[in-house]
Length: 250
View (spheres, rainbow, N blue to C red):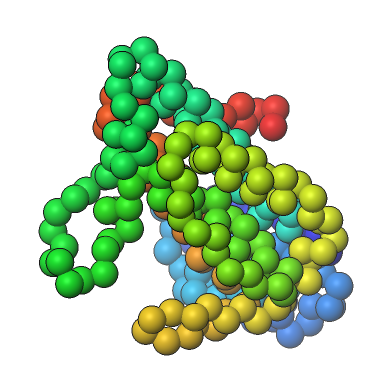
């Protein structure tokens, strides 16, 4: 099964809903799977039906221009997580160098938080209050748990018990190794799998594609971005390049 990213640029006005409905009624089952269109300066009811696009193919959107970039499920899940975690390792190394150069404490950086106030003592801690070490932990665990869900083998999160930069490097290395060992073909069926996520407010159900695009990827980058912000706030000299990594050749 082939996955493609579809980017749409409106030329005039969209007339996609009727065309989409016709396409969905007549499309053969073997049409390549595509990701939802991404619109710029454009609002359309079609956005509400991205799962139909994901399953049946790019919509016929009137007079829009479209560029399709071939991708596969592995690239958009495990491959994406590997890149993010590798970039996080670079940032972690810079944090170590910063502590050594300034005579700062490793523990101070590990326990640094983006926010420390605004939550009552008996309320659940907001993830913004997680320490840097916890943000790194959940970036790695979130990636691993998401892939396990897509594989149909949900796993239990590892303990958040890192006490040093070395512990965090070990956790990131282990997660990257796990993700690299996955056969891309094993992930293809995951997009159609029904994912059930237990939550304190009740279980949530979604298709694998919805889970990946609407939860797993944003969740991953939430922790990666917050970890970056914590280090930057602590004076670690990071740049956008440290966050993005060598994207042109990766």
